[in-house]
Length: 286
Image (cartoon, rainbow, N blue to C red; front, side):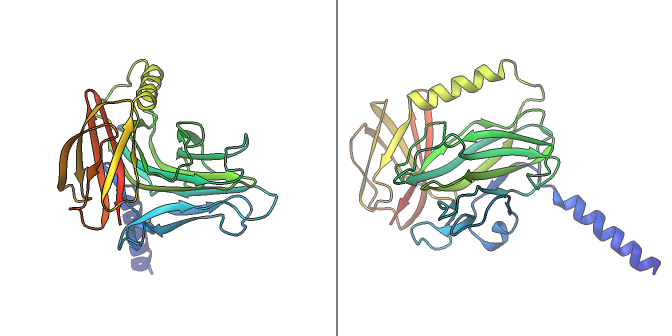
């Protein structure tokens, strides 16, 4: 009996020791094992397609994204959360990259009570029991676009005083005709050991840079040519596969076509550099 208790205690301690994930951490959602490390909490009404799930990207093998479709029917609140494994953020954390796509129709524009956002939560994995919930990125009120195009965000800072906590995607609405897809999240520890000064001012400046110098890629998906538009004239474009291998590199001008016919079917990361501007986005080749 004592032996069984000891073994149970060791098992419990071991599970606690491995429960926390150290940074850097990445989530691509491309296999069942990784998908199983995220957990969904449905805190509102369950109706129709109103939940988080995983979907293949353009039918590409082994390439999935996290998806939430619009609620169907009902007059009560849909409030669904998808929460990461516990992450060690005691040294601070920053989201190096995150891809997302939004589309909608009819009344797809955000309503005052709607929330589609990435949160940092701590104290409990269940958002209803968490002691802290803080928005890291608000999809509806920051560079909102319903154009069915993949965009990337970078340099999203997790609160520096964070301890061990979770990243959590929230979809809350009474009823709205809006879908969102999220993919390829990379989280790294902050390099500094001191809380940065004027952190609010820095965050505002980063948002202004992203908004004023954003570059768009279209069409996406594509299998022959793509164009880049934005507040830049000349761009150095590098295209990588998801192993980090450089597949194509070329300098192009705004609205000039770039041939991607040499790229096999798949999902790629496009890095754009123009002066001090550096931006990443996802490209699907079909």
